[in-house]
Length: 434
Ligand SMILES: Cc1ncc(COP(=O)(O)O)c(C=O)c1O
Image 1 (cartoon, rainbow, N blue to C red):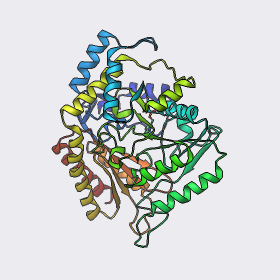
Image 2 (cartoon, helix red, strand yellow; image 1 turned 135 degrees about the vertical axis):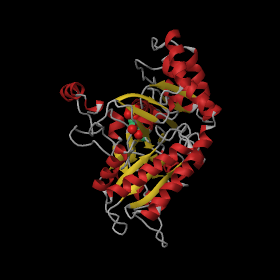
Image 3 (cartoon, protein in one colour; image 1 turned 180 degrees about the horizontal axis):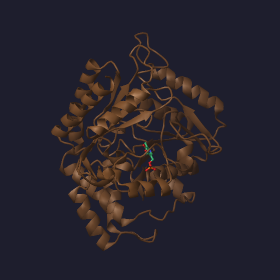
Image 4 (cartoon, rainbow, N blue to C red; image 1 turned 30 degrees about the vertical axis):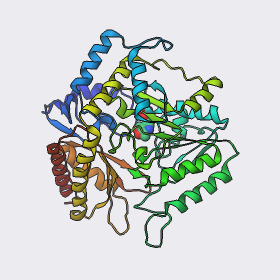
């Protein structure tokens, strides 16, 4: 019998755990190291989702472990009005990494960082309307959930008043086309804002966007889009909030994804990757916006704001990313992974599209390439075959889209591990497609 089948464990899990979305993998994870998690049988499973898209340094990175040990002994948590050195150091380091965004608040989760950002935007603009993409994910709490459209809207009562939405550009399934058939995202954006202007009561506060919509199926904002979006915001006196929960801290081959576009948001939120698996988030903004918010009495006071332990971890994450050249590694390893995925597209009819940047890549599974009909079941079968062979990869299933694998190995992933992942994926696709 597999030790993963431990009846006492599963009986207790089934009896006592609240089911919060999806199903649980039928393994018991005992430990994790680098790019692998180890199950109860001692089997190593290659983790191509970096935990929940967060463990950019791999699991149990020795520098992070050392920081947690050291900082836990020194001071882990404080009264929210007290400061410690790791907090100020991390704020200084983050400000230096994102020129123009000099003010930093350190929080705990992605949803929370977006709550703070939206709250600040409302206070500073005097508006309350928040626009987001129809394929977005910004978190499960009030304002963040109101701006989340990829899942979870039904059954929880009204969203925040003033929640508005536009479609995200989709190069694989364009809504507007250029004469050559390519995606005409400018017309789409103009059209969408015409609708926003009709719906708005004149109280637009912010647009919140992911530079690459991850839970929405790895939809990349094309080059030029962010600049055009920023202009739309400026014309209307609303702030642009960029949520780089998944794209921040090097994953896309830039420190932040927005840097490719030469556009600085008014507010930047970081989470997942900043703590590399430990709960840490940050909200960055300009001196002017922070000043205006402060003058209006900005309040976002939480239990774990400015806690020294996660802040110290954040400093270590930035140190390791810089010391080990992980932003460049994301480019190199990402290219290796992407070229393997593009080869699948040649070999397997079910691979409809390959997209993304650096080490945040999407592989879209379709029933056939002509209709682009979503291959949900096939995607699920491939994921199962991959897991059986020792590769964990996450598939996003969204209405109107195919099953999209989100591939985001740690930035520390080796070439051999990329190759192993590709080999398992290839076997899994071959097995699932018979
Ligand atoms: C882009 C983005 N923003 C925010 C969140 C929410 O973060 P958290 O689950 O830490 O609240 C997520 C989580 O998946 C995310 O992908």
